[in-house]
View 1 (cartoon, rainbow, N blue to C red):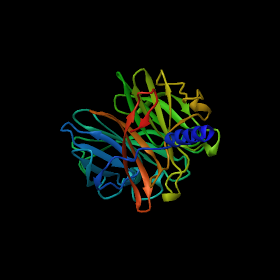
View 2 (cartoon, rainbow, N blue to C red):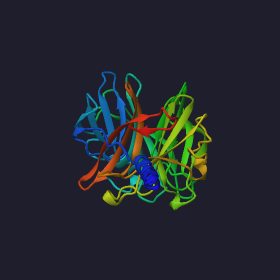
View 3 (cartoon, rainbow, N blue to C red):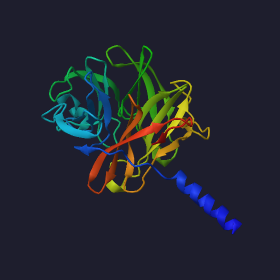
View 4 (cartoon, one colour):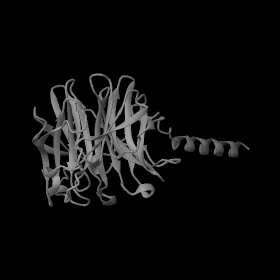
Length: 310
């Protein structure tokens, strides 16, 4: 009986390791993909996401969400056509920031499997559909480059603005931005996967205490309930790295501690953003079920030194 009891304890402990808290309750227009969240001066949440024209969804309470329309309402953004290879303005993985008076929105233009990619910037004083000014190109890549210029992420550290970006190839890159929001200076590698086809993307940097945390999405996106996306993390005492996972494996050597994966009716969580709200850090992501891709929101608990969904 003692052996059986010990075995049951081990099984129970193992089960608890893989038990995830489901996404928090959200209602209304919650269909989304690669979401990013920010808040305007009035306290309204704005959610921007991958879509022809870039979708805009808002909420006053982070629970009930309402679709407003599109950043570019006619669905087109002709200045991106040479990268998307379409004329429908299907733009990817935006990143939003509100500076107290206006929105900054970085977004990517590309096509699947291509490094002919670019990150662009748009600005708006209201965030409303159609009220956006094209500020032009921030960073580009082409076939043969080390990085793919998609999935932009902003991190402000003191007076310095950083942008992480990248997908597959040599993984995740880090650079600085000038006062206009355009990439400047050198580019360094902060994460890559030598295996699994190099499947790492959707970076998001967040600081908690003395550490910078680099979140990424691994494996296969955009395949509905066949997606295998999962969210990983590493940390560093410097924004430029080196980042390591909880086992001490460098993220540049394929390291990454699991934060969230497929569980229950939640398939392929990823495309994440980490947003610091008044009640703490929030993990913002999409997941799949049989009806499509939807918004996931979880609190993040850093009390152990590593983020845990709560």
